[in-house]
Image (tube, rainbow, N blue to C red; front, side):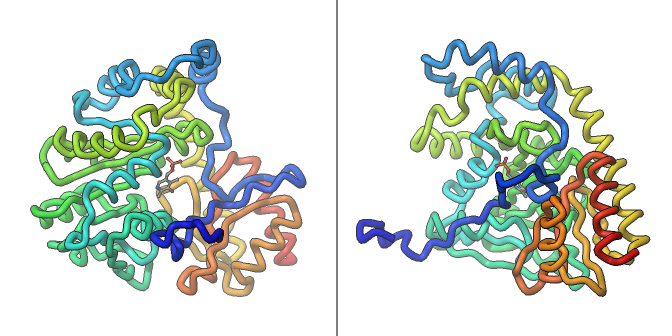
Length: 352
Ligand SMILES: *Cc1c(COP(=O)(O)O)cnc(C)c1O
């Protein structure tokens, strides 16, 4: 830290992204990216748009929003696009949390939530999950702050039903509830339809996982227009051109190719079922993941060791050193071939 660094941030512990080593070609199962390339339509649109990079991007994302509204069935003032969904989540922390409105989220969830709270100097409360990693929804009723829930949750992959989300939203008439649906396309019911019914719900999603655009940084929030307006105030006070031209074009191309996205999600769902079944045969225990990752532990092989040994074999998975998660690893679901390579490598490590 330099002597010039603001004391406001001197205690800030930043988010640690999954490693992206360059020393060899790995099978990357550690950051929940898609194993599939972006849609051809997304690639072509982004390349074409590169010719206009001398011009600022459209701060209203007009064309993207128009197509989006048709696909998602929302009004144009009910959506806000951002630089990854991390940005809309940060906007929500900025817009809807305060000294007397703490952020409230599960103790085991997306590691960025406490960082956003710290960054914005808002208090936060972490609520433990049940022993089996499920969320007890009643813990969030009349929460007395802004609720953030990843659905499905990370890194467990466990999802709430639409009716459970509805119950949380209904039992917080005076609080905002933010549902982070980064992994919704892999088999969970989306809460987007509830936005029409409730003025206290924000749903966020991303193009990073199911739409193979992690590197484009494109995310969005859906909410009633008053809430979108609030977050737009933050956006226009930080970076009006937060979505760059090429990402905007790629997103639009992608939305014109929903069949491709659906087929890829289906492939991941099948690959997930295959991997879960094979890993169970090897003695692993796991949560009922509805995401593009699985969360596994082996009774005779430690989480940290599995991560280290697989890395030596050219396969990256994610290990969290937090005590409650220490036994586990989070493994991104790739193609069936990648999952087979993972299973073969693990079988070898276990001496099977
Ligand atoms: C990946 C992820 C995000 C954000 O991803 P972006 O690439 O910033 O869109 C948000 N929430 C959860 C739970 C995630 O896993």
